[in-house]
Length: 123
Image (tube, rainbow, N blue to C red):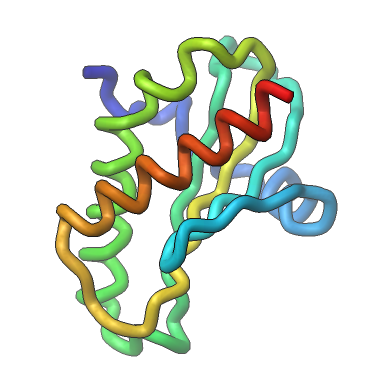
């Protein structure tokens, strides 16, 4: 299991703006993945960020818990889906649901989401 290391995190404000203006998206409700094919200066193949709407979750505690669940589900499943993809991508995973969740449902939806992304990316 590879860790979700610092170099794998999407932090560039400029790249995030470009991702939302030019990127494509796949969905598996309540998750949505916005992606953009790009090149990075370091040797990482994917840079990923997670986001939970403040409008849907007023308490920071709730938002942070869902973000932790998203990051962990991504970390556990990324090797299974990304081994055959050669290009580098910037990814942003958004949680669109309005109610709380548990790890099992996030994990199954993450698998559906990454499967849809890998099909689109390999075309």
